[in-house]
Image 1 (cartoon, rainbow, N blue to C red):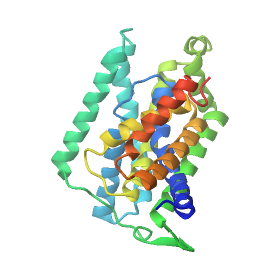
Image 2: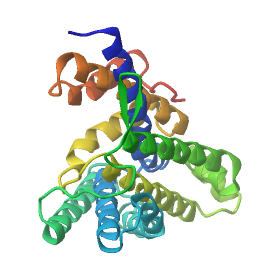
Image 3: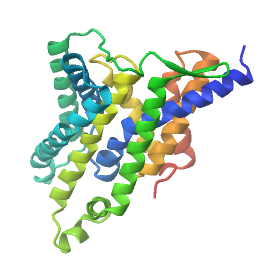
Image 4: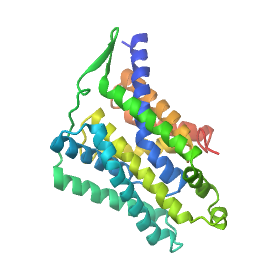
Length: 291
């Protein structure tokens, strides 16, 4: 039977889950929201990062969060190269990159999934750390340390990215190229280089997000299929390009999912993201914080 205590627990756990969703989605808010690149391979890169963290943790006993920091520069280079390929194949030629661009990134996602299966198999993989398996008790409420750690790191990552985009020269240039690419070119800046750097950042944050993903729960090669809907729903619901909106939309989704999970069961939870998205778009088509 549903009670106030269950509602309280659902809201608290939903808040923690929402901040994790923000860390998972914030890179897509840059690549898709600001750069208008149909990066449907975003969740596949996320799962790839989780397996990179698993490999470092399993082979060298490195803490998952430290492993996430270690692979972050590699994912920046991966994003840097990926955007260059996308630019040379589509944007440089002036061709319509809509459907073709989506097919390009779906191909990358499929290749990543196959490579992970060939290397690690289809079994779930997990990591070990001192805070995994333990919990903090507040009265009759039990909060796993792994969720608290993911909450703190995800919140810090999102806030840091907001500060970077609003306070630094390159961050303001990334926002400028999203708003007026031609004006930025007239000022002597190279929009392609800025976009390439921005896409590198959007992919680099997945190093940390991938670490949080495998800290939260074991991963498998097909997990990206579960997150592709959630991440795009969060970004569109927030308003394209709004990093702060991504955080708030993620928290709304996290709380809504845990309440639905508590009241109606696990089978209804995956549908809540699309229900929220449709509701927001019906009232405010530009998203909660869209311009």
